[in-house]
Length: 157
Image (cartoon, rainbow, N blue to C red; front, side, top):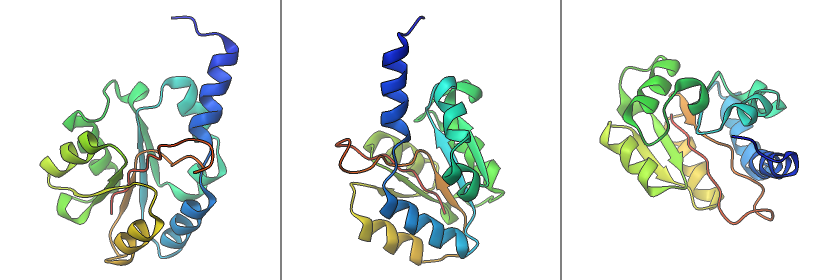
């Protein structure tokens, strides 16, 4: 399906803006050697852009995209692929953070701990502080809070 260039550019800009406060939290978690995996329902063009960002290369130990996996969240296999990417066999050691209830519910059904992220930085910090020796699983970086009303971050640890 053909998409006008202006629409693709606007869409890409919207999904690649990040909240610097969230990045700060994630960089601190990464400094504590907390592995992070990105799981995103991004289409091919957006996954290429995300892979080229500094935060993706510096923070994420791996990145999985629905366009490349051939399946989307909340399909259980998406979470299973991401779990395998962390090397963690016990899903109870993984924190999944997302702004969508259906994605959190699907992750919880597989035994992952979940945090429905609503933009409250303290909630994210508190969850990441608990056992920092476990991997973090992210699905999509949240956009900057002033640019879009919903923020979507999925983290697993």
